Length: 219
Image (cartoon, rainbow, N blue to C red; front, side, top):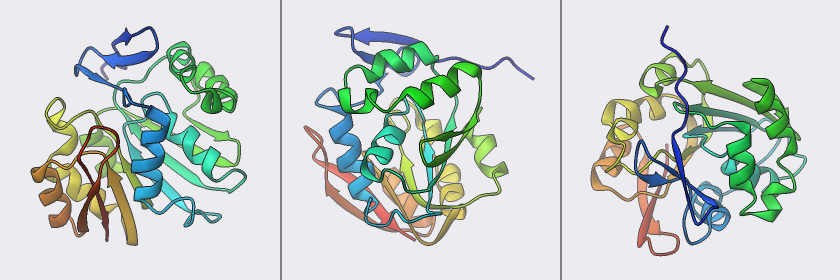
């Protein structure tokens, strides 16, 4: 088996991690935590739907910011969070990224502590987290679970097309419970078409910051 690949980072303004592999920042330059709330939480009607046992899945764990935002929105709710990541950061890199968001940094210690030990299944406050590392085109088809809500947060389709192909979007649909949802910051036409083909009723909504549109859907 090939050795685990790590994130390759540059830091914009000393605070914003940018993937040098994909030439794309990990979160919005206009405010990553607010973007997460606008796109992934509101786009999936969270926290309103966040009841005990609710299952969230994510493509692209990155800094863990979406997980932190979910906890902040639904503190104490026993959720399940499964996330797929091909190029994991180190705990120190995550901690550095979190410093841009005091509210997130204030609750991130359990994530950083678990990550530092190499754990990829751990409790983060009330959330049961499973991080599945590797090429998502292999790991998602092998996953036996399903999600009630998806955070589709890979790097830009223009920079990382493998993360948004029709076969992978079909797997997202296959691993979504009836009535389940997805949200993503991208409004690329080929991504919307692939998700529609995967069984979702797809809707375009106003995006965050300078992005005109984003995409949501229900199965």
